[in-house]
Image (tube, rainbow, N blue to C red; front, side, top):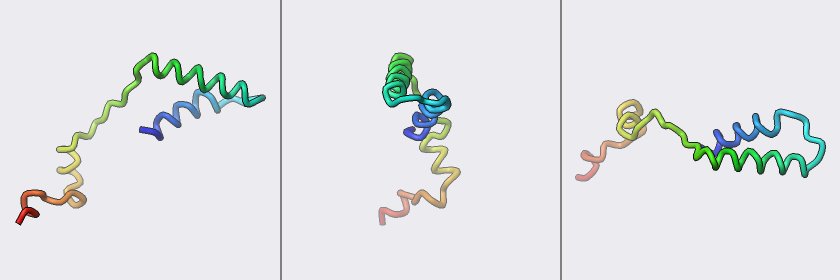
Length: 67
């Protein structure tokens, strides 16, 4: 999730030239306020069940490991 937010800030604040640190801080603060006001969320497409099915080699079978 952090990588997604960093990418959003990079595209929103750092894609243009910044003449001073104060300008950068204002841009970041403005974008942060907008993102928080939007209550931005991430819609995950992979449920735990889907992950266990598709990545079964990486997930141990809990039922068999209880013995």
